[in-house]
Length: 145
Length: 446
Image (cartoon, rainbow over all chains, first blue to last red):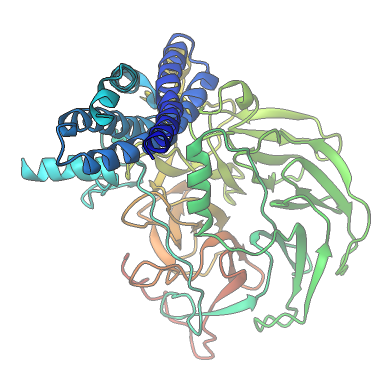
């Protein structure tokens, strides 16, 4: 029973890692393509950004749902604080990412601009912070007591 | 402050701050231009199609309106032939690929406001020899076209502006069907074809065909490379197909017509979106030889659009201001001048303009046919509603006007409605007694 639970937990951790890889890689890529657009005014770069952000939101949305569920399950345990911080970081990343997706739906230069690239910077940083929290073992140590 | 907060929150969620200010005058030669208001979510409000049922459009006192043809397949522009037969171009073109998630979503939403009928890709002939409003003949005149739009009759040929080429067919007076193969006069710019309609009119002397070619994007968001020879008006030799570019930067010239007293070329033009509910005004303008009308770099003359990079200040400095604003997002698709005295009275000299209607402002606008009075070949006065009732009071759509055609020989106005797939016929009420000195005033603007 104990090993079954440990196995399930390992699979869950792996899936979580795969899903979290999407916002980490795609928000970072969108930041790079945003910068490329602002430097060249070549439309293809902002088109890339739009799809990258959309993909980050899909993967990030799954991570957000998962983190909220874990937060609820851990509500009456000492792990609550860790999950609350993690869920807050992911939620902020996702919310700002959604605003950035709408920003990138504007046309031509307005699809990025200072506001768009600024959001891309913040989303990238938040995704990296979420990655550090998730992969440093900090959450798991508290979960698998 | 609370209001501002609500507004900011709503803006983020719904883009609900796209309301317009009714105090602004958005028509005529010198429209009020508010500052640019870009929203994160462009407000999209589609008038839900419900059809006409037993209702008909509303026309001024002293006029009647009847459905002259129904069951068409997306009627657009019309032409009257010398023998009185009426041609109706039917179809839907375009199909520009989606490049961003936005294109996928916006495309689905816009589709809800249009007819679901398949593109006709044909020209229908209507013959109403006794002018009673009930055609004796309704036949498929030319078939297997490619999204036909502009029509012209010059030197014994019917010219059809498909979405990708100008073609012609020999015509014998009285023909109700043409089976001859099309003769291609020239290709027309058709790559991507974001704005696919090819409006057309023959010059007063019949020596030139003018063709309007719309832009390939809202404001250059597909890149400026594919805007070569887009947002232009071409003058084409009807025999050789040789062309020159008459005007540039004229975003989407959806209907062209010749002003009868001067012989000058006029156009109605659809301007850009997503600068706010009251920018940029769609317009009616004479098409001046060699003129640049601003797109994509500027609107209404030299008002710079910040979305276009790299900028082009030299070109903006050369941009001319259009003659007459029709209102933002009204989507004028039809233009026909009253000729030979028009309907008389208040409707003797001027232009009928079909407005397809908005899809991106909260207060829906357009969805009617307006009359713009002219004097000495120039607009002279405010536009007045001529055919209305296309919207219900609760903002649902019975129909959407496209092409308009004034036929001076019968003194009728035809209005193509591409939502209900109908051609409406507006005529003065038969008055056996002495006609009234002037038609009654049109209903107040709604």
